[in-house]
Length: 193
Ligand SMILES: [Zn+2]
View 1: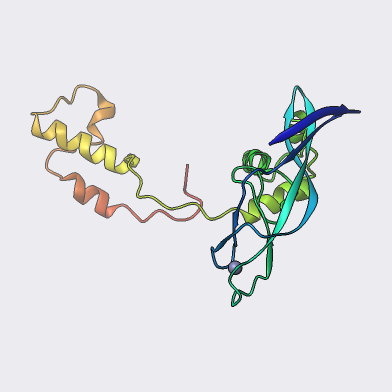
View 2 (view 1 turned 135 degrees about the horizontal axis):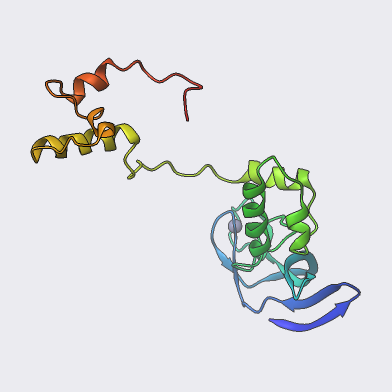
């Protein structure tokens, strides 16, 4: 729940507090409404009208109701806004991760500056290292060899048109393309186009 937003120098400061009555313990999942204490978290959010935004969020620390839980108290998190130990909002963290990936080791943090976000190059690199590994999917796009093989097969099946000299190389009369491809030496490192 936003209480107010003020312009403070070059910053926009948004003061807010969470309004949920209960929060789930991150260790055991038990929800609790027993407030232990309150404090203010300050973190950066995505810029508004070119001005950096700082959110001052009043958060509560709850007591876990499960006496056997190793986490006696825990701070509430706001979905889509905060994450544990984060000094930035979830949204700003995502934006910076994308910036870091785009710049990947060859530029400085000028783009981040253009977004009115203060982030050094070392910060961006740290963000990349913390990102989870992307899932590897089987590629659905045909490679060049596979494309040439299928094209030659199609030409063979349909009687073939071999008027253009450049086409001849992909479908030699009397030789299956599989044989030609099989004779090709394996591609070595450094041969990539
Ligand atoms: Zn717990």
